[in-house]
Image (cartoon, rainbow, N blue to C red):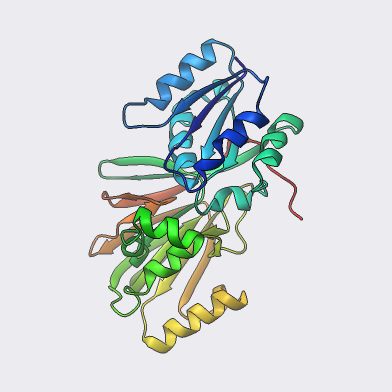
Length: 297
């Protein structure tokens, strides 16, 4: 068995799974449908004993997130390579990696190219130690994520994240944060949101970290300061025009690590997954996984 493939029936483009089966016809692959009973780590370890070389995440950013956390629990010298088939609603991380949205092309990519070393981010805190591939979004971003129902995602697709933010924009919560970024300390900042990025886009290909690269060994840290309605308008306009990081309300740094404290405690989504524990430290793990990536146009 050369590959083990995890797929999610709940992914936004799961109806294209038969197209993927056709694209992988004749290639030794174990298919595993994700559910609450599946232990990804045990499945991968078992596959490794059978000579598995690649783990395929066929789904959206949430599926990639689950697979990444299992892979990072395996000894570095035994970790198989990661291939991503974008079958989700947004597919933000695969977009950063220039993986084709077309199922057949994405399947051909990992069969015809060599893997590249890609960074992951480790978070830790009281009762939490996790990894993620793309973006951790904290503060009011979590409130938007909690508005997203399966029905809304199905109806609006990638635009569902924008649609879900409408009610939040008129009632933004303020977080008083203290941050230490590679030793540089920022105290008592009133903030609407904090994003710690490995990839460039989040929430449906919205560019939140335009300078980010998951192969540069750095975190891209974006702190959005609290303000008034006009500040919000400037931030949105800056995002649309590509000058997001130049806004006065945005504090941007590239660094290896971030220590963060917030009052009230700031919850985060990790590639769409809401975690209730408060992360205290974010740290890049350089070259953590071997991943099949595309060629940016």
